[in-house]
Length: 234
Ligand SMILES: NC(=O)c1ccc[n+]([C@@H]2O[C@H](COP(=O)([O-])OP(=O)(O)OC[C@H]3O[C@@H](n4cnc5c(N)ncnc54)[C@H](OP(=O)(O)O)[C@@H]3O)[C@@H](O)[C@H]2O)c1
Image (cartoon, rainbow, N blue to C red):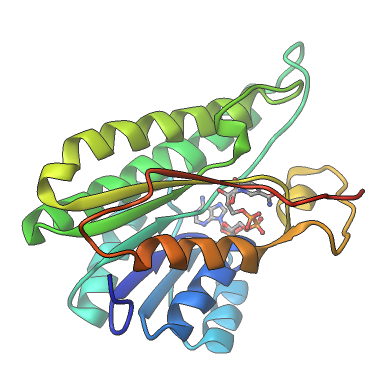
């Protein structure tokens, strides 16, 4: 697809990977809207990138419905959803906190479903569109302390496969992108330490790949893409 003038909606676009994706798509000439819950952060990022801010929680259905109304009011169209908003909670199964588990599922699974559902309504009517789901290498194998986060990303991967099977006949491309560790605020927000090191992935590396897979001619698409750091050092 040609990104020039394409309309892209990036959830969780105020920080980290989503911000880098929004920046990269806007630089390629796309008209971009970003979402996030924290109004001040969202406004600051939108001003910095020259994109349109929509304060909304992906896990809240009325927010999701309003997000799409705002996108259509502002741009009159939609070509790309980047389902990026995500949170983590980590700990041993024994003693895993139910509220923490449900929060991860609400954003990473329910939120992605609500956003994908509403995008699909628009894309089916137009008979074309693109949904990029940002999962993780946590979507393909388990690890200690991963109960909530890994399960949420397995679920996102499962939904991706269902949507792809359902929506291909409508010319809708559904992509899964699985980053390994990326230096963002994610770890700190989830309450675990992260060592910054130039050998580790940055948000712009994932943004580079998102742009590249979208830009392929619409007759084809990359179903699933995993991004590793070459030789990450802690
Ligand atoms: N960093 C990594 O190592 C890594 C690796 C693999 C995959 N991922 C995935 O990449 C995605 C982005 O992560 P990141 O590392 O960029 O995290 P981040 O720096 O913490 O950014 C997360 C973004 O999502 C927003 N967000 C969180 N919950 C939301 C909700 N319910 N509704 C709307 N927006 C919400 C945040 O803004 P507000 O808090 O203001 O809402 C923020 O803009 C996530 O899906 C994550 O699982 C990250």
